[in-house]
Figure 1 (cartoon, helix red, strand yellow):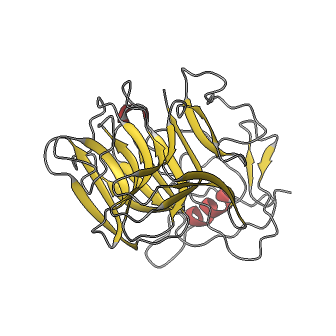
Figure 2 (spheres, helix red, strand yellow; figure 1 turned 180 degrees about the vertical axis):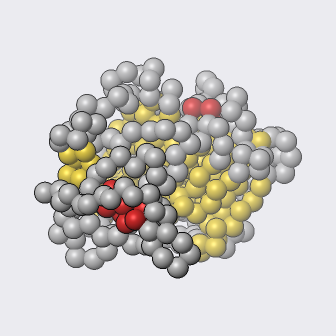
Length: 321
């Protein structure tokens, strides 16, 4: 029930030491749903708490509401909004979506997934069709009690071998930064010694098996570690000189992590680990041009005659077109 509050309308602004009726009228108008278009806006800088079903968003006619229902959480939880570069719309799971996916309309959105099967294989579809799952030693389905079914790609005891997902060298790659490409992979390597780990994009049709995955004339963005790195490292370049190198401060390890590289067509590259933003590479920081074709890889590489295994839970990605 909305309580009608008295609005005097006497036009008394008060002075430096006294409230006037204008001050009281403003508060009463604010609390009774009156049109405040002719008054100052309200800017809240204190914490307001709305109890369950108490926050309502009315329709334009003020006849029905969206009512915010909360769950029985047992601790505070943050709900984070993404960084939007243009107006956007919420997506809800039971509502018809205007953003069509790969299976519905390929010219609108491209998607690709690496889905682990229990038969020593993974199903590759969408934009990952045609990729190669490589492991010179073995490719084995492994059930992990925390992760579920995974695929372990092992090398032999030979230096300079790839294990994991390798891009096809034919064609012009997966896409371009222009199309807002995003790739996410959850994986781990069995050991960080005698090993390199690379996940990301390069303009090279074949990712080099070396400590220089991006040369001076290459374009791309890669996260992982070289044989000389103590921490997870980010490499990027636009083909115009030495690549940029960013140390994340996160020690390399043999644990499962979810890494994501997101290209924002008009601006930056965002690198995240386990849902947390690790680095933002500025558009002014020698990142690939929007016109450069890029190939995606997710591999562990041997550096000595010690075999290594890259275990992948999933890989997924998408692009605007």
